[in-house]
Image (cartoon, rainbow, N blue to C red; front, side, top):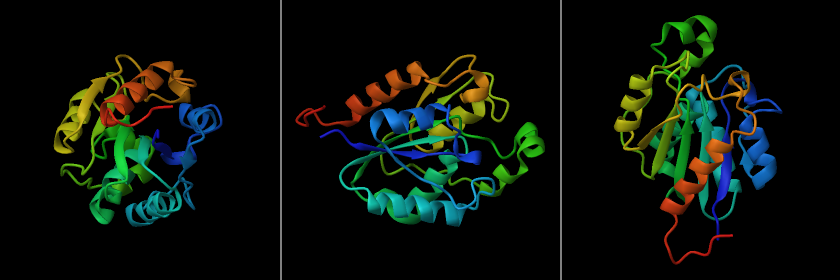
Amino acid sequence: MTPTLIIVPGLGDSGPQHWQTLWEQKFGAARVRQDDPEQPISEAWSARLQEVVEATPGDLVLVAHSCGVPTVVHWAARYDGGGKRVKGALLVAPPDPENATLQQVHPAACALAPFPLTSLPFPALVVASETDPYATLERAQAFAEAWGAEFVSAGDAGHINTASGHGEWTDGEVLLSEALHAWTPPNIERL
């Protein structure tokens, strides 16, 4: 069976036209809804992700954007990465808490620092943009390397959100599909 996607939004809970929301609807994904999506607290956001993991049966793939990325990384460190049920993670546009623009525009996001910089216990793909105002491509690559993740540049894609023109984000669906096929053993029937 195909793993269930768990959408892990960042600040603001990814609005109605954000690719995460569209994917949730399109793929029947579970979604992490934080009590306060404007004030990330690593312990609280990780605990909420754990609740959703526990409530979602079967194999799982985490799909995180922006502050959802460090949420996944903190959660993996606190909760042993969900055991063997988490088959992989698509980690899109990780923010850099040392980035001056992020500190100025979204200082609340910096509350998730420091990010754990240890290998994740499941396969992961980090996707970042060459023109993300909240993290340089080099910094995103360094995160991917520390987390033991594969890395893909999305090119000139801003923060890979609605404001940068990424509603449907069909290129992201291609990356997700490739990652799912790479993470799924060949004896598993894909739907």
